[in-house]
Image (cartoon, rainbow, N blue to C red; front, side):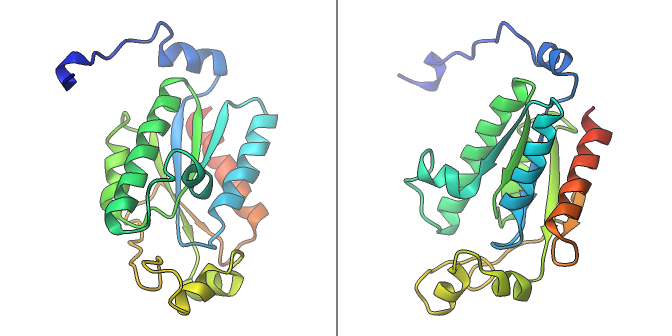
Length: 197
């Protein structure tokens, strides 16, 4: 079987119909930042509040995805790129279903984040930089990963021996090094209400 034998089937329910029923636009809120910056915490706190307010929302979390869909991938640059490519495709499917997708991935490379942006229509990808200095992330180290990386137990660890490319023009910056989780969550929710309601 070749790609020519595979046909895209148009959905019987359009994205616009989902959005009309949901009373909000669909979008990817792509949270990116170093390990320990608070991506998952902020994503889940915001999703809970948005859900309680009637929004159709889902969180795609980096660790959770690696337990299933991407469990075959490691942390080489090539595997990281494939990890983000797959997540982008999954997020796109949810956007087509009228959902707000909040992703929480380190996603260290600008090029990969740009490729996800190009999967959806203009305005449907919103890069959210969870800004936090490496030293603060390392002090937090909720999973003990920085300590392991410093001891050479985890190769290719972002911020230690693998680069993190900060966003150049994110739609939103949440400074989790200067503000607590609640303040960052509130900023994200306000952003959603202004852009997607």
